[in-house]
Length: 256
Image (cartoon, rainbow, N blue to C red; front, side):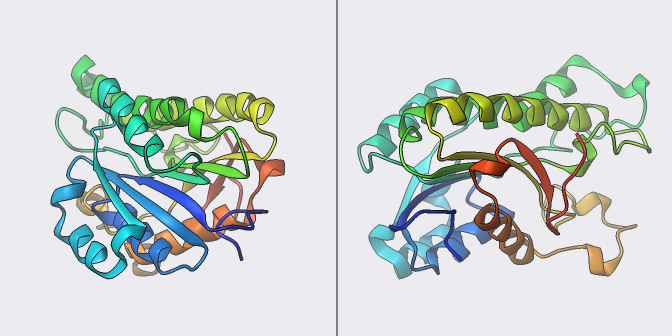
């Protein structure tokens, strides 16, 4: 299966959030594929990551590393300029950006725990950064088959919310879903071969979920490698006819 549908040449891929967790696992698996020509690994510390150092030693010029804080629009502008200097077209962009419990963001259990700092921190990382990444990379997405996939979360589903809690995380992911859906309509006009996907990777053993794994069944706590494999499977199976949709790791659609 091709890394994205209907692409018949090696793909230029960008992963944002690439130095740890699911993002790093995606980099490892993408570089192992023959249909990936160039992988651009983006994170706040991409050039200082020992894990990405090891991949660079193995894969050489197929791996390009760029330091960028995607919460900073000037940094996103600089990122686009650096990418454009190396390639004219991206075929796949994956955003793994997300925060749940890194202060001031927190998983609020009640209205009494809400404050402006926590809400802003959650929305900046979980919602604003992924959509602004898409906005700034748009000049590189106007031709050829292209997929933009962002990690969302099942708890961002309004229709699936029966437990409450996690106010800012839920709301920021729900807002991301709406922005992705809206962007998919515009991109389809600009490039009919474009696909925009919101993807839920399942509960994965990363820093984001670690404090909340106590009640997760062992068979529902995934390794980053497993989650990355599911994400790439979803991307490979969904093309322009499914743009603007929301999928779980197991291939099932999630209600908005």
